[in-house]
Image (cartoon, rainbow, N blue to C red; front, side, top):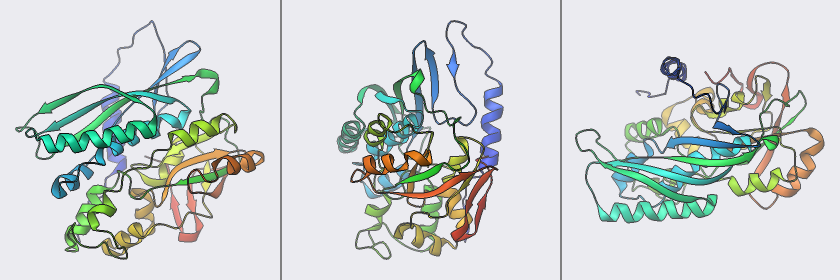
Length: 335
């Protein structure tokens, strides 16, 4: 079976080559950022503004092929706001970008429903956007957005305080979220599985399973930050569990991972993928990572209980990379 797996090293080299050409900087304000950050920050004195830009990716191709667009707006918002909260920023506003071949009022209605639900879940205002009709440029609809958030600088979560012995928690994902869909579509196609079929091991259709919207963690994280001094956070998106290494160069030992949902197990079997490949592509049911001091894990557990499914999945050690002993998975840094 042909495999279409993103080469993260090549992607990193592309981004680095692009950024090296951008040398101009204004002198009247500073940015707060480090290589690999989930969000970009602008220094405004006592406060910082967070800016994020992300899209839904090739998940939109499945939406188009099944004519199910009503959850894609949730995905777009989630991909942005879940990155923003990794530093503790509160997302407050967003603009969207939609490019498509031609206008369709039913698509507009369904997209609007999803964006409205996502905005409510993230507690943000959608303040504008752009719709481009570009039939000569694209084959499928493309949806992305840019979010803005705000945080007091003395409350920023930077990862710098992470030490050996800290505890790693995972907040459960709602499924695939919005990553790995080039691989997903390839596996389904080569397995002759149609979107209207029942997903293997599930009573829902394939379309319903793979289009399950990305979980938004904004309210849970912001509420927790007022009580627990969180040391580091990671949104598990493209690059899978290796996103944890973007917080700080340490050894992250995941010796009690959340058991992957059926969708991941089935894709692994159908695509004949290894555990290493699965954890590098997908979130494997661990959608968001929170790292706290061992003395604070009881408080974290108490406030998160009944909010979202979660689990203590491991601890931090001196060293580098990701280790998941249960599946003999050993991964290096993000790039």
